[in-house]
Figure 1 (spheres, rainbow, N blue to C red):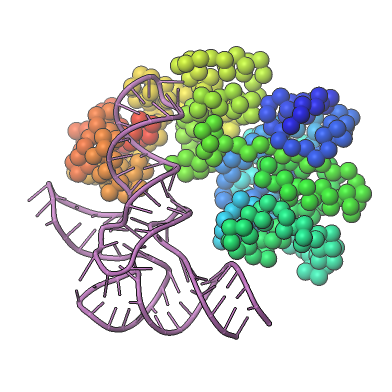
Figure 2: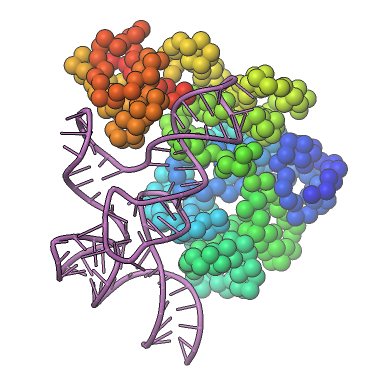
Length: 418
RNA sequence: GGGGGAAUGUCCCGAGUGGCAAAGGGGGCGGACUGUAAAUCCGCUGCUGUAAUGGCUUCGAAGGUUCGAGUCCUUCUUCCCCCA
């Protein structure tokens, strides 16, 4: 897109840090953001008990919004999750129960407090659940009030719908209604909180546009939409999916150490971009880090990992993760902060089959996998490759009170007798 | 309502028309090279087990034919297309 010179601090920051993909009315939004407090929202799904890194760019955008003196609204999709967003999905999702969804929301909530400051002040963040209004509509009422504003012709033209149809994959009427509900969300937030702007990933562009138009048509009020680029790594992989599964933000689903490792393993080509998006470091500092060449860029990755982990888990956890990584990778030593697996001392004294231990410690999904891993030279006991997964691990393998198990070079678990 | 097609290794795509643990690819994992990077090359990728031959469970669901079924037959489920 062209480079409009934004006047408002908010849009200037977003632009400089690479958050902007599309804006519905750039000049008007810039004007609004430059002359007063803008209330903006982003919707989040509640399909899992935690958000993952894929949502982090959205969370960070709300943080930037607040930093620039505006008011963020976190919209939890308690109602829309009951439907399931068809965007980018090939198949319908299994429907979750109301209780599951509410439990997920409660769990997700804890993360936002780390990035935003909530409260009653004019620029304090608030959190709302769209189940509050969506589940109250009667069918006839909903159709009369909102259904009239949407034409099927138009809805069929949206990418999310078109893609499903073209691939000859079924799309239920339930899912087809998702974009109506999301539009109504925006309208509802505009009425309740004077919300002016909806943000989201570029895949949400169509849904956001619908909301913008609904508000403009029904309430004759200004409304704006802004999307972020779809985040993928430089080599094209989707952000946030690794072999170990999604990179969850909740600490109980992904340890601070693993979270630190995720960022540490960023590709060279992504370091600058990620620093801008996911840390609060000043841009000139980032430019300096980004310019590092060869092996030195690893320093930039450590800064990235440290900053990102600190923001989510706090300074203490970030330092522990960094120290554990340094000990494990740079000094070949042990650190008590590495992930540990506890095993009964009596079992260890009797001897535990290595394959069983590797599975129990989460390094392999099955004994067969552990065996293959061992045969391929990827399974290490106390830093020595161990080709025989049948061998017994005993108390004799204890070194410094623990047995160090590794699958590959990066997944390390300390087995601790208890 | 009538006619024609489709569902395959629970990550995805996809070959297979009586001997199949099932081609090929993507993805993922491991190894080598490096810098805990990328690219490249090599290996692995249903569970379980051995020094090794093995055992078990898989091709939408349930039955059937057969020494033997992903493959043939019947019924069912879901989806797609055409006609009404």
